[in-house]
Length: 128
Image (cartoon, rainbow, N blue to C red; front, side):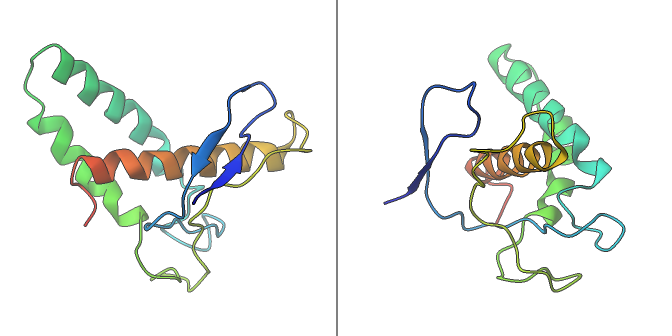
């Protein structure tokens, strides 16, 4: 059974997260090329949205799909990052009690969002 977290006080419904198979490196970007804080990950969500829009419109998706494969390197199966050795984050982090305007809150939201996107990539058979 998964753990239950409220990702934000603005979200009324609870979302159940089970332990993720894939993890993301929590290290700082300047210390690890696979950090979830990497600016290179900023386009992942947009690419997934573009892919979904094309699919729903019956358009070709091969060019977007091939671009998504590059992001798979950020999602790792081991317990520790293959680049820096940091313990990978594999579960969503609760934001309860954090100031929504604070930096720690923003980091948790970003991490949780990327963990959810890992599920999307896995469903599209882009993570193996």
